[in-house]
Image (cartoon, rainbow, N blue to C red; front, side, top):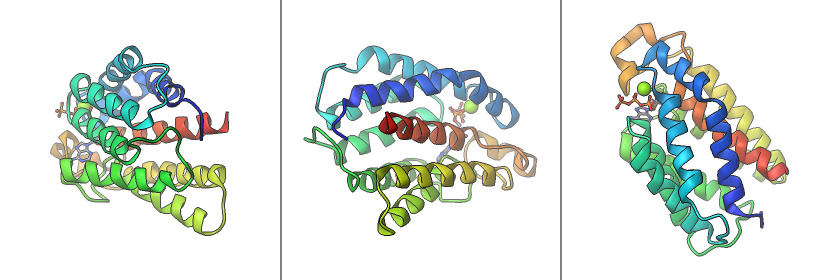
Length: 206
Ligand SMILES: Nc1ncnc2c1ncn2[C@@H]1O[C@H](COP(=O)(O)OP(=O)(O)OP(=O)(O)O)[C@@H](O)[C@H]1O
Ligand SMILES: [Mg+2]
């Protein structure tokens, strides 16, 4: 993983910006139709503010988090802001990441989101994509898989997690106001978290 962190971040940004309308449509069903707009605005700012030529993975991730925190807004801004800043702490001082850094980063991301948003798995949030993804990644590594195999498994588990959010009721955030009427709709935040992971996987694949 010795490739430029900016290139990875910009792949994520492009993926989110491409899916702006899709994410907003999902949020129209169970929220206030702003998730895609919020996220695209934030990642557009990231593209403009994050240094292109830095090899300092931790610093780039931290800057990404700070930019998302100040530009995304809503519930997801502080949550994704925290996620990238926590990832930056794990990567502090590193010029490249190894296969083993990925679970440490994902773990820090999940803990940061949980600390900030006080949600647990099963509440129809981004955690329902991220937690199964980490589990699948770790399982694959322990079974002897390489980075690419482990990332594939993580992304598949995240997609399954998104499907699972259709079957449950939201108990956090704006969607919780709908109660049982939130069942049948997929969670926008779990979807954006999955898109981010898929962008990282595709970046690593080259
Ligand atoms: N407490 C939480 N923990 C984790 N994720 C959460 C939490 N609350 C909301 N989310 C995620 O945020 C997503 C909604 O993000 P969005 O950008 O639309 O914010 P919002 O709810 O519209 O914010 P606001 O209510 O402040 O306008 C949800 O789909 C869910 O995945
Ligand atoms: Mg919303």
